[in-house]
Length: 153
View 1 (cartoon, one colour):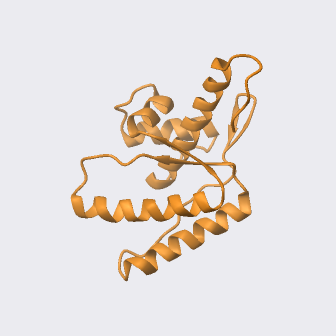
View 2 (tube, helix red, strand yellow):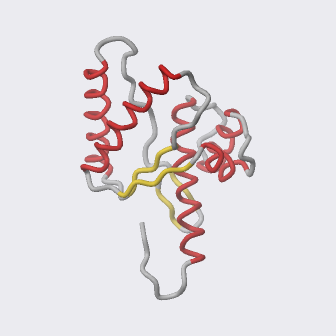
View 3 (cartoon, helix red, strand yellow):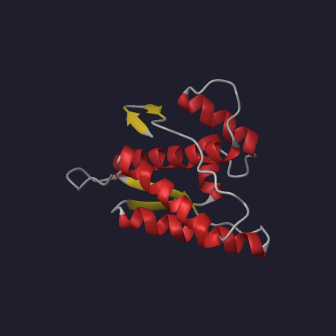
């Protein structure tokens, strides 16, 4: 995500696909390898993630937590600042309601970034929503910061 004034632009977006079958360690290696390539290519300053939420089955939560840990280790090793936001914070930043549904989030993401009318894959829309949330928070933090204090990315 790039911000120039009040205009947001998606630098790149997509999805890292990992097979649902096979050894977990092999799938995590693929995930981290692909993320490392993206970090090297785009050289971001900050990695933003959605914090884990309750309500999914324990088995899925364990696999998600392992993947998340691998991603966190990858971006931390690259020296990136890491920021996390709850699902409600993200939805609120994008739609004005922390209880918005996926279609509302997708629509507002596409409007905010000028990505047209075709819905995005939900993973892509969710990732862009997290980036937009961070950008809005960063802007608010800068406005709230006393004059003369140090800036953060």
